[in-house]
Image (cartoon, one colour):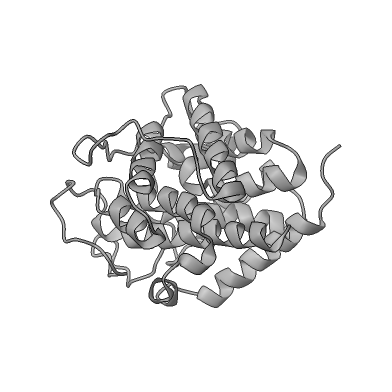
Length: 283
């Protein structure tokens, strides 16, 4: 991985966490029914201090940790990490899992109870796969196995629509990582038109709106999370795209400084990227 590629990869990883933390204090609010967020603030809903990530960050960390430890992508091991997170708080910012969506809860329970590695119905079109996408996107690229994207997504959201949305977001990440630009445009022309729900399609479109209408990392994240609604996931997805576009150096230090266990996460990301560098590609 070149220095530029690593900068974009670390940028996308860290920005997923940053966006999650920025948006969580105002999730489930109306678009203009909350204080304007520009800094890390406590989340009253979950009683967390500034810089505590939610399910978005935890599930992404579960994927990264598995690859870092094994040196390969193993869907069953990722699924086991999801179970550890749900039942034991593994890689949660609190001692327990929290802010868990119903589809994710049901799917992870199925992994635990039946060893099922494909869970959800076509109606499972929430944003649980795209909110955690960057580790599986990077693994798919490094190992030359595009199917990793669907394997990881299907653990919780087995749906053709979700797979298509995952593919779309991965393609955008590819463009941004390569050139810093993307041809993708949001279907939303105005802020008023943006759907801030937890639907996978609208989450990616909302983040594209934020990216298309701003000219800096910070402005993109601020625009995204202040859409309210599923603000933590919109922030996490926008963070991934903005991180791949602008690189890790664009993330404001004051935001990074607030992240819980920053040193531990930095170590995990370093080990994850080292595993990607050292593992042979699939034939």
